[in-house]
Length: 286
Picture 1: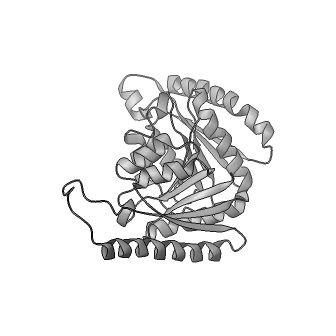
Picture 2: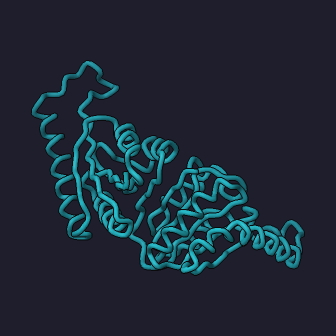
Picture 3: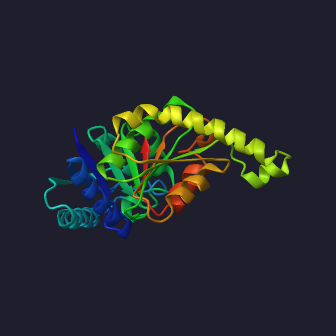
């Protein structure tokens, strides 16, 4: 189904995610599904506690109010996009993953309140990013009207991210910046190990040719997309963030990879990109 699922909790971050998703739905010709997840279960620290019904009703009402407000926001951003709303009692990660099976994309803010508190700082983010069947977008910031930036490594697994990045750049009439880091050490560090500048240049050029070969097929499929290649020795998260700056429309990464983007979703690189990016970050599974 061509539907974009958005986790809603009433926070400013959630509202930002709704606005981005509404625009994306208009661009992609998709339906928007807004879901508020609330958890009325008892705490692990007090398993015998019975939550009064009026408290449960209040929690549910807060979730309902948040979803309806989000629907109004979405309709303001993209009046022509169909919007469906729902509220669900349960664990946030499990609910989003289950509903996400029927969606083409899951969109979430980086911070939130209530049931999705700390969504991209803990286990929920790890679970959704690692196990979602489709695309997951983390709206860390609104971004701008600049390029689409994609991380490219030396494995076929990044091909899914590259293909999606080309598609997004075409849909958004944006330049595509393809970033590849052939070593996590920057040029100064390589010099410190006795590697001469001309040798660094030669290795960079070899990497440029390898990246060009990996991008060639997509270039013929999307002849309208202007591509800039950045191939350099650098720590991968820093390279992506530097390329994106503050005006990138989107940063696209694969969910697994080798080389400069190893463990992107479950390690320090992913955390750095998601926490420091000024633009939405899209994770694409192979």
